[in-house]
Length: 94
Length: 471
Image: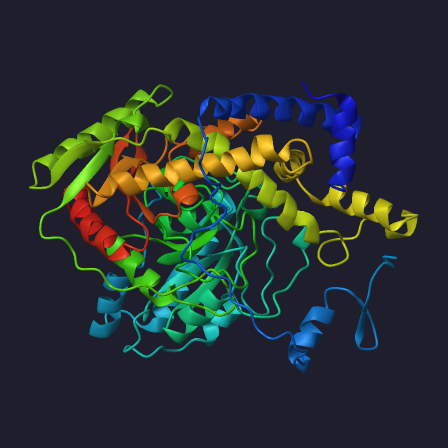
């Protein structure tokens, strides 16, 4: 059982605003899916390692250095937001 | 077969198109205008394409006949970036987004002579099994317009089947290429995890996502795969692999765990008939066991939702996405809540919230870690089976294409559509869906699953099987 309060907390953590009807529906859906996945409890996973990724795939890293974006790409990106001179204007975050 | 299917079509396969072009039976211009007129005729009904690149197509006069993808005309799932084109991922949040660069797969197709004709409709952020979750309207199956085409790459499957193009690129996280391919009677291929670059592809669940082709033949699917595969510095998990020799005699495995309750009788019947046909063709058929199969979908649900909740964090109305009621937001938190609450559709919200739950302190070990351990057992099941057989055959879907609206209110029953496809994503395996028969006038797809990086053997066997089932 998922409490109503828990759904509200999860929605806030997910930064998704839900109205009462949505919250009720999502709670029911989550209960049904979580009920279904309970069967994993029947699997013996003692001494089994989690498989987060495949062993032969290795992460690649490169030097972190600034690069310039060509003018055309920059213009394309600017079209998506409100711009001010050469900057994109967004909501203040801090 | 629907009366519209295969009517007025320019050509069905890329190989056939190339032949016609080389013989001068059609010109490049006629090829493209043929597809464009087909789109005009049909797209309103099926809603397969979200945008048509008409002007760009008209500029293409000819392509070098030396190039491998000469004559290939693509629909591209709308979560893959083509420079200058819109890329919505089926979401209201990205309605006005335009791609500032080409995805690696797009660059490779261009370089090899392929051209693009449109962006294909899809479930929002590739979350869905029916193509009913697009913010831009549901897609309809060309076999029967009242049926779903499968999802999430439904638009790609429909466009290829309906003659709007002769190839498409989609993405597959839990079956999103193979399941719509099965529902629409075309070939769909999900490559081994790590063979095809995802640079420029909108992420859903990063440890599963792979890009792959839709085509009208196995040969075409292989041709496309050969041009898009390979290591890319921009996708850290990609690697190259060596060519493998095809075996002299072929052994296919049938996992009995895939023939369980819940499968529609018509599908089971068609699958068994298709298997009995190959037994008569000097292909050895043996039983194999994949004992953890029933735990695949629950493990997938948890890992997928967890990765989704992380990947969707970027759509906050600031880095990406729409801004709703901007002046009314009093704080940044409120802006996030509004932008995301108003922007994401129902299925996306459901998965994000589920993933937030399974990753929460206190539930992380019980759900997320447990699922990743079960994933390891599922991968081991397959490794053991591939010691005995070259490929594994399994149904692609448990049902025939279902009615539009039938499952939208019941997410669990919708997710069960992917019960046979998620296993390959969990284990990172390559898998094809090939049409293997019809029931009630609707197509049935067979999955051919190979061992990791064994694409050469998978295609070798699949071409033989396709020939048998086409007869």
